[in-house]
Amino acid sequence: MSTNTRPPLKTRLQATSSLLLITLLGCLSGCTVTGEVPNSERNQFVTMFYATVADVTPIRFESYAEEAAAVGAVEGALYNFGDDDMLFSALFGAVFSGIAVSIMEGDLNGLEVGLQAVDGDYVVVTTEQDDIEVGDCVSVRVGGEVQLYHVHPDYCNQAF
Image (cartoon, rainbow, N blue to C red; front, side):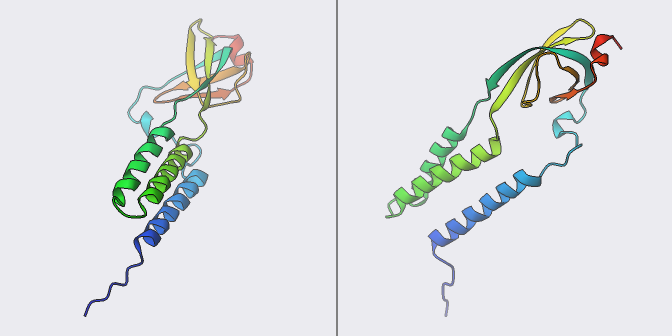
């Protein structure tokens, strides 16, 4: 004698979605530890130099939330194809996928920063940092990613 004790599909889908959302939100609040070197810098040549910020231009990074919503809608509709819940599943898939990707992408605002290095070179970098202003003296670390750190202006007034 076999009895089906599994909860209904809609309940399982809601529970799974809630668990994924809680995991994503929890990861955003504490997945990275400060001071860690990004994986993209493994076995990489890292350059460091001092520079004065010459230009700052606000930019916006591209987002994939719209594409994720479209794929989520199709997946949700196909999951319940032919059922009465097909429209609900498509809407739920679109909203959940779009929100999940938006959360993972984070803030899409950034800066294109023109840097006048102390050795005379002029370089342009893009960054997610929002505290960079024209005239700042920064230490620039270029590996897999670019990181800018504010330093005392004396570092930019002389070549090291």
